[in-house]
Image (tube, one colour):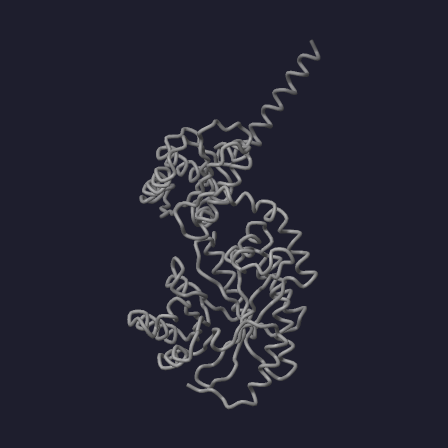
Length: 438
């Protein structure tokens, strides 16, 4: 009888612990609970992610966080016709529903976005929301794999701004590559497969070299050259983007100091992932690097892009403002292509604005783009900012940008990305050539 009571007590404790482990802070079942249950045949796995969810939570008192999640779950339950909605961290919500023909399912998820046209009203707070979906239809796989697949697709949809991202079966072939990416990156950094190229930037008025952008490259021994966008995305998924970015910073500083040694102090531009700009450790980490390397931060330009994958916008703006106070120059990259470039320009005390190549490439043939570029240059100058044009592919575009008042040019016509040794050699060679002035 004692044994029976003891066994019963242990069993109740196990059931209680299981409930705790499978329940989110909102009181809703979590993604672990969904991953632990068998999935019926003919069911799709859907994960929804709320853009800037962390920003919403940062605004709300902590006692309203659960209510926020529950309100979102109620809307999703109505739209999906599913009673149980599972809640994960970072604004992720998941469920399963009957598989429809693909086009019908995509239209269904598109239609569910209308449920979030009305703002969330939580206590005295009101929030406009934007939602993105990840969809997994790979029947026969275990629940955990399918939930993670839908989760990855939802994050891809959020990052790209698309409404729905389907986890294609072909992507499963890349699973081993993604899982081994951590070790592959470390090995690539050690043996020189991953390296930095530097693309020169030229003052359009004087024709002098004034800066360079550090661009990461990877020559993989079996896969060959890997497009930067591809492996940077994989690094973000694998949680390796921080280490990769700090490595780029270290190498870019080494290059800048090498140029300083020959008497050429140029601006060195480094790209910062949207996943990093709102992190609490960003500013202390960069401060430690510049102190240790003994470089003046005014020589370094941090390039940031306004995207929906910035989860906590106030924290991002605070971080970037602190970096500028320390001395870093700030550049808004790909201006005109983000979700809220004008809002970012208003919020962020930046020093530089980079015109996206899609506008630059059309200024000779499309009057509308030419007016957009001219107006953007005038706006930037009125705010005391330097304007850099990316993607200059020919002399005529270079000269047109000069007439429009652009300050700095960058592109294959002016210089291809190259190792620092080649940039240094070409710099010394060009100094002996007649200056190129528009």
